[in-house]
Length: 454
Image 1 (tube, rainbow, N blue to C red):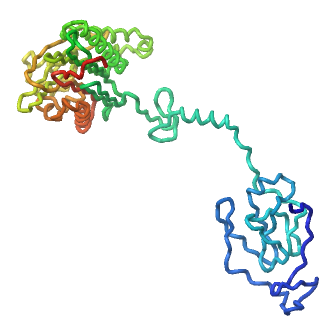
Image 2: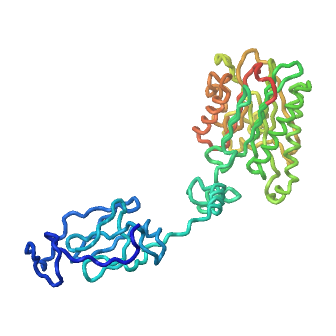
Image 3: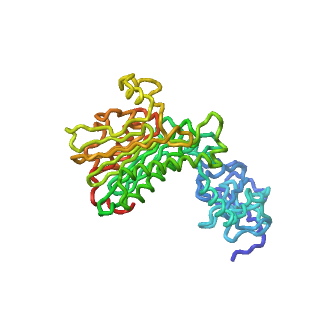
């Protein structure tokens, strides 16, 4: 082990022939070198790698040596303690006679101050340029990582934290919600719902299910609800209605209730579920004199091996699109709307009524402030295969006529219902996406593999 005692500085030598010199010599006694001449600086500047980074070596002048420390070794040596073994000075070039060289593989020296004569003094250590920080407590670091992972970061500015209301505390941007885009495939049926391009949230909801009738034949259920935007908590209203209607149908059909009667009961159950929201304390806090109670529209379909049943309240619709596109499609529902009333009364034709700004004012809905609940139901027995398209006005605004809707539905809709639902939602978004868009695609007749609860 190298001694930790201070070293005596070595005698100076001739820069030309390395012959030892005496104090006060002006010329080398061996080669005659003029010791008063300042040697030229080397042309090249070698690079020293320190802790993985490349730093240029400092220039040397007049025999003085600039100290360079290795940060790693400085951290290992305690402040005021001895020099680490194997560390020596850095040669300062021809003018720094007597300076020890760098030990192989040791990097650069951790020395002290420079004496008036050539050489490096090791009698004390200089203060380090930097002191190593204490290593963080791993328990504290782990807790911080958990907090950072659980905190939501804004999708817009990527910097702010998202508060409990879903808004960025930095830029105020509303964050995407879970219901902004929803997709579900349940056996042979599927549905897609999207917020659209103009609304700040998705107020639509849907419910799907597959069950079996008492004779073992399959039955497919699809419910689509559209929250009334002018009402309080329209998103909660549509969700409550779709769940209640779906659960009622899936409970009644296996018991032998006729599908049309079961649809009527499902709409009544959905109405009760929405009415109950008006008594919820959350509604009371938000409710204002100029606002209506929670409300939504509903349209649903039950498809069996030979029967197609639809039910509705409001202006959400159901369309029939045959697999053979040479056969005519049909709209299966009639809107509860101002425009539909004008047409039914003979006061306007359909084009005039739906061109009016009052066209989409609904006259029927589910909610505590509805005038009177009038569930509409209808049964059909198609003589050929096809699909039922169950949708909100966010879709049919861009494909209102049955022929237009049939032109958008893919030919393989029965075999690929989820793909078809995506195509239909995409059609609405491409058209402008002014409203929430929700659509369910149900094949007719219900295939056998759709039997069983889902």
